[in-house]
Amino acid sequence: MPKRCWPCPIAPLRARAALAALDADLGADSGRGRQRWTRLQAQQLAPDAPAAAAALLAPLAQQARAVAIPSLEQAKVLLQSGALAAQRGDTAAALADWRRAERGLAALWDGEPAPLAALRARIARLTAG
Image (cartoon, rainbow, N blue to C red; front, side, top):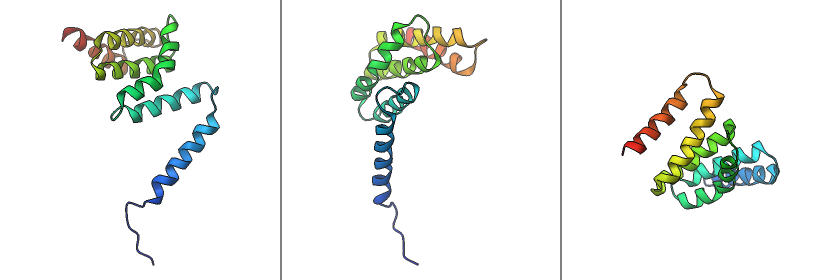
């Protein structure tokens, strides 16, 4: 039996090729799938390149800001956009996005589920500090 050496140099290439194929399959106008894919790409970019992640997420965040009460997917975009703004040190933009997301989540959910409570606590910490 041949000996395997890890990490395998071929596996990341196959993964990148599969992700590129998925990206091509999604197309530009596939709605929710494209939105989730963009959020995932921004999440992967955020630790190393927050400016690039914010630029990638900007069109989705703009759409989410344009509606009075965002949907769940739009609230997730605003949460991510606010986190990137906070990472850059832009507390005003982070608060604006998080408050809009908070309004959307509060309109969608009864009571105060854990994600909404965590968001409210994050907003309170940012306004207090």
